[in-house]
Length: 333
Length: 303
Image 1 (cartoon, each protein chain N blue to C red):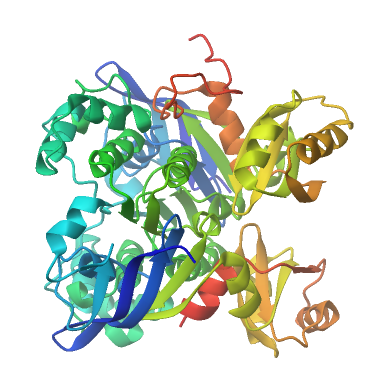
Image 2: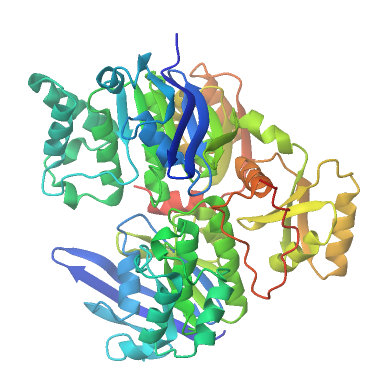
């Protein structure tokens, strides 16, 4: 069976900015592909190119085998799209909103009501059909947005940062819905700032400056940092961070909740843990835990960005005019 | 105990027909970084608007630096830096002009103080760039600069990291900590549980009520009624369904690339494994783990 989403060498520039610069990906039925990357990397432009809201300069998009450029109506019939800022009609009820989207999507009149009830049931809004959209909570609006994108039973779903600014309870139930859709054979492309969400996807792609720098199954993607992440729990944490940065094998230090993740240079020897322990002891830091952990996607994300130093990355904080240690060199472009 | 910078005393706000904030009491002490969490619509922003004297409480009162939020709102606002969810920047103005505008509002005439604010947030040399042309991570920092230009000793930040990428988010928190180390007190709302882990104390709101406020460690110890388990199963969806139906499981959900279950104190890995293999689910791994703030949040704020 061919991939439901097939993107080949997609390019789109705005003036001199190459927003999407030779991007290829393919997503099969039942797969979810996570697009992650810094702000301005081109993720939203990719979504807009795939849904046909923007025309590509070159390259192709096939949706369920239909060429978006040649037969846009056929290609888009298979597609549901939840943009970052979706609009609902606040003064219309939940069902009226769905009817609007159903008719827009060409659902026959006799079908819209049973389908709307079915999809409201699926997203957990069955009891709210008569409520005006503006009276829904933030989480419920998000689910209505998803229902609207799904009303015509698309086999392809594009979700542009669907959980940005959404609380953990809503995020949890939103993702349980996505996982259920995969079970029904839908192919999903989702962009997200949450690495824990990317970790549960079939595949993940890191995007920067319009290109996919790296893509693969989450377990493959993190392999590049295998054995190079030390998790440290130490107090006071800020002091521990400073001390760790002074150890030459330590390439970077990041806080993960109440722990620190130390990224070691490739090929760092096993003596580094002892050196760190000595460093902490001498510096008055109490270290209650230090052990190697499997790298996670956020470790990879940070390492990728530091290696690339894309233009859109916020510069390091530099309050004293001094250079911050351990910033990687900007790569010549 | 250090001095209380914020005191909310049975703070209440009723709108027609519903109570947005319902008898909320807490204190924020000098030098603390307090995280304020809750589902969308649970009353976090309404609380903040009352602290700032922008909204009249229906009941109860708030004092900030000892000033009453109703009668002495101006004195409060002169001492507080506030950053709203939607960064309040003028798109047509340059970064420098935005900053000069807010400096003027706060009566800061010293241009050096304005430059210092830009330097502090790491935006030296972008004075001439229009706000609309800045990437979102920079806009976020510019918004912070406008909130700190009058050198406030309390920062109230309402979802400051919404919509920025993971790296920008991290360096924003580095900034918050730098400000806290320089003596600022910080009150911040967020949906990111990893950010909440960085806070001295964390409050969790639900439907207008403050359910708990404590250090992250104490919340995990006291507010989570049971044990946390990581469950690795080959097929996530059937495993999730099976876990949710399993007796003794209080909550089951997705966590990164695996599942997470909360059981009562009597829960065991063997019982979970047995329950799942009863559904024909094989190749399982069940591990007891430490609870996270997300577990606490879902337990308290979930339906």
